[in-house]
Length: 374
Image 1 (cartoon, helix red, strand yellow):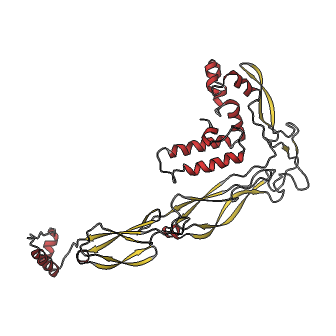
Image 2 (image 1 turned 120 degrees about the vertical axis):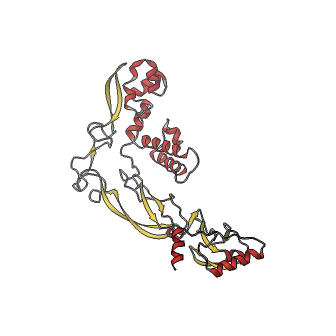
Image 3 (image 1 turned 30 degrees about the horizontal axis):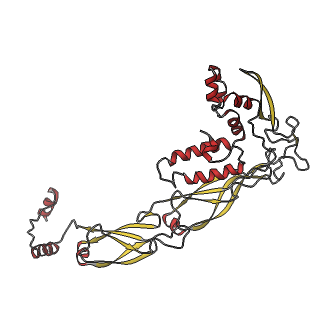
């Protein structure tokens, strides 16, 4: 897998370009939003590619060797074919270029970097998802240290240029290889790639430049949101490095099912029971909707399973001014017990229609015994 091809970015793409491509593709192929065959596999591939390119060490390793597998560097002694496979088939020119650092990415370790994105799950009732709401959520996030303003140094002092890498964040290391001694570029072990040394660390953050704080933010849940959908709150993620911007917060919604309704998009569905006389003669009944009770006229001769549309009584359409419909399906219920008058009325109905009815006794043995002793 080539992570650059997966995300659709060039090999010299910036961190911001990579993150932007990842956000777009992860949303496009998210299993909760994309039900097409293969979307879940594509989503996993996009995440694997981003895991490589967001990590400077993994990215540098891929750029040098064409893989992030540690075993790939030690299994090449089985012949030139092994090297071709481990190094992506680039040939000797690419191999030597990688060993000598020609493929290493030269990035400024002091450049501002955006913070990590966060994800928050919000539970909603069926009605809250339909009509939306405003609420305040709280969560822990990494914030810029208020004591040192993110410098990681004790107040009154400043970070100094790394004495080992001289601010480059990388060092050249000589290693023994099957081709002899060769140099590779690695992250500086003194400054950990930052290019700066902290002689006196900030007492609050311990030299990290960040602290974990409880953060609260107001959230406006849009009307018509559905289970599994998400919204992005810009700048509500974690703090960046070198005074870089905060990442974003993605809120993923989980909608609880309703006992009375179901929903697909902006259309709400429900079932309603009616009696045989109501179905045969017609009636006007009350139907419960998310907007309250409404009247529904049942035409005479209505068959069980008939669906009626209540226009505009469904869910608001997400990010739109329109409202969906409510579809109610009626079911004609056959009574299990009848009085003698009801039986006589049904026999008269059958006789009027020319139907000869041979009534069947549905009672069990114990019912018969009980009736006999009454």
